[in-house]
Amino acid sequence: MLYQTIKTSNKVKSTLINFQYFSHLIRRSRNNILYGGWLGHQNFGDEAVFSGIQSLFWEHRTIFNSDGVDRLLLSDHVKEYCFSDFMIGGGTLINRSKWRFLGNLQNAVRRNKEILVFGTGVANPDFWMGRRDVWQDSSEFWKGILKDASFVGVRGPSSQEILSSWGIPDVKVIGDPVLVYGIEHPSTEEPQKRLGLNCGVTRNVLWGKSDENVIVFFSDLCKYFREKGWEISFFSVFPEDTRFIREVIRRYNPDEPIEVFEAYLHSTEDALKYFEKVDVFLGEKLHSCVAAACTYTPFVTLEYRPKCLDFAKSVGMEAWCMRTDQLNLMDSVSKVEEIYNHCRTYRSHLYSVVAKYKKKLWESTIKILSSKIILLITPLLDAEASSALLDLLIDQEAILKLTSMISM
Image 1 (cartoon, rainbow, N blue to C red):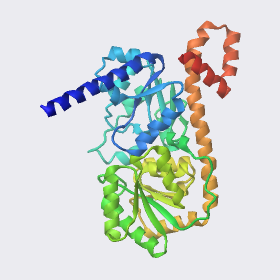
Image 2 (image 1 turned 60 degrees about the horizontal axis):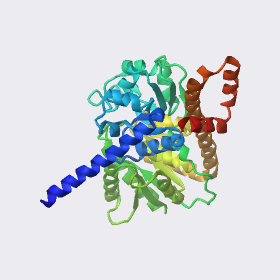
Image 3 (image 1 turned 135 degrees about the horizontal axis):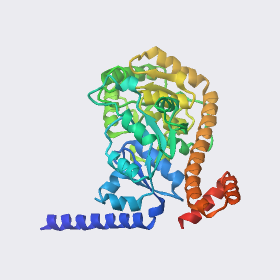
Image 4 (image 1 turned 120 degrees about the vertical axis):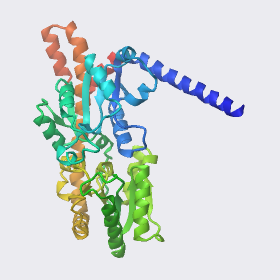
């Protein structure tokens, strides 16, 4: 009886939450964006991308997770009313997999909704072609989706190059959306031989096809730097990665306590505080390195898939990138020691680059918002007034004020 009461109570609670969610959809239907991404799995990177995009748009547009909306079991007609645009979010989503959100994306295309690509990565066929068991080329599908997209902004230059080779027009590199969290100033502390590390499970879907080799490499790396008197800690971005990291520590020395910071249990802003106690970082998972960049912590990227190089190129750190099929302990030691010895130079470099991308992300947001304003207002204006409006929209404060007025 008690079990049945609890079960009924939970069902009522769930229904009320869904009703409140649906009510919010209806109230702001003109300003809702349906978002495609891999959310709800405790993946720090995907969640940080989503929250970063929300922070850019939150005063003017409401962004809803496609998978979450699907749980409301809404008809396609209701979705058409509730959402004005579909956004393909951050993460390596294009030409990668059969994502759950593709049904909603196709529905948005059929109903002539605006398609927005914001900080997305593109799967590199040079890597994925030999992995037919986990990947199928869907480039023709994506070409059809993207050729008429309202805005195409990607994570890095490699993604831009692939889409341009497909004939997609006006592809911009706007950076990883998490870079919007770039902190105010780089650290001025003297480096104190503190090394942050990240690695994780890939189920052998990486350059070299061996997670075991990565475990051995990090175990040897820990041993080398601890013997040289360095302080070591780990930054984990996914629950399964934490177990992977603990195996690295067990192989190195099960009796030595080494901190494992579980970033996925914290907000993005709180997770970035980890880097206050790190001078140099070496990371395998992409968004561990993006997080390091947000705090201007010099980093070496262990490229397990091409997306890591794509990001490293975008912030001018490709020289400090190593592939997982070319692991060499002393080469990695050399790279860590080099950026450690020139810590201030690399902090300054990352501060400058991240500031550039924060500006690009805001400019991209404003462009998307301004295009909506132009569509709504220009039919009511003559040619002279339309021209004046376009001049006005160059000013960031004016566009944000106008958007607020239209959202009311």
